[in-house]
Every structure is written in C-alpha cells, then in structure tokens.
Image (cartoon, rainbow, N blue to C red; front, side):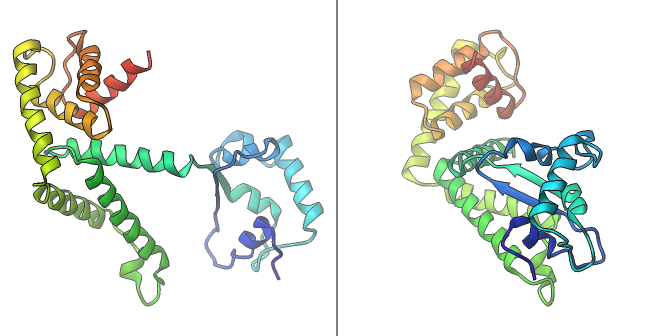
Length: 247
C-alpha cells in the first residue's frame, strides 16, 4: 500500500505498460536539493550519475525503503520521470492569461476584448478543461480528449460571440475613444508610426481595458512610437510599450 508522501502516492500510479511520467506543481519554490527536478527531463544535470540525483535517490530510499510501483519501478525511475514546476501566484497567473486572451483577440482580425469579456472567456475555457479532466476515458473518450481543431473552433466561436454581444455602454464608450484616438494618430503622428493608425488605436483601447487612464495610455504609446519604428500588429506594439515602460 502506498504511504502518505508525494513520492509514494505518485509512484503507486505507475501501473500501465506505457512509461509513466510525473509532474509536481507548487506555488512555493523547490528546495535546493531537488532543484534539478525543475530541469527538462533530458537535461544533463538530471543524469543518475549527477551528485544531486544520487543524493536525492539515497534520501528517498532511506525514507521509503524497498518501495516500488505495481510494475516494479523504483526511486530511480521516479526521479528520472518527475518534473517539478514552480507556478506563479494564482492572481499573477490569472492576469497573465487575461492579458494573453486580450492580445490574441486583438490580433485575430478584430477589436480586443474588454477585461470582463476576457474573464468570461477564461472561466468558460477553464470549465471546459475541468469537465474534460473529470471525464472518464471509458465511456467518455470524446469528452476526455480536446483536440487542437476543437480548441481552435471554440476560440473563434467564443471570440465572435463576445464581439457580437459587446454592444454595451462601456463597449460603445470604448469604441468612441478608439475612433477619436485613431483620428489623432493620423493627424499628429502620421502613417509612419505604424502600418495603420488602427494598430495604434486598438493598442490604445487594449491599454484602457488593462486599467491605464487615457493620458497614461497615450504617454506610453508616444514613448513606444517615438523612434518612428513601424509596427505591423497590436501584439508587437504592446510588447514595445511594456519594454519601453521598464527601461
């Protein structure tokens, strides 16, 4: 019977004929002695001959002597196949995902989603992933596996639905600001700043949805476009904005 340690519980699941792999995800940093588990599985510093690997295997065997998986795998196999991931704080991860959704929606042939739209999309996506995780391969194979084609179709359908339903007061207000800013861009900065004033205007709108005030968003864009470099899309201009901000 497996014990209470992460090692014993995970190795006890090594029952199938395929090679089992293990992943540990924590918000806390990994202790120095196990830092090598954060490297890619084929990294040279993870070889069994390495000092850290040998020391970890010796300590595991001391604490859990003679423990093996149902198909005979030992601590050596567990150390070789375990990847330890240090995840960011949940709020940081959420903000990163929301930012990615808004960036991708702006580069998907239309206006960037607002923050509340992106949050709705993120919650819907997480719900889909959770239902897939909870489903059993038998008898719900189709629910268990999410194909790339399904994910792409889901993305396009939900983006279109959010844009179609964006006729809210806040959305209308944002569009008016975008139109006004696009005219200012064309008049004051000219065509040399970007491939199209729309790129700058859409980036301006995205900065507003991310919480920047109008004057701050314009200041950030002025700084990013001061060199006269051309930006072909919203994503490249947003990256320039935040790179400039951290100089």
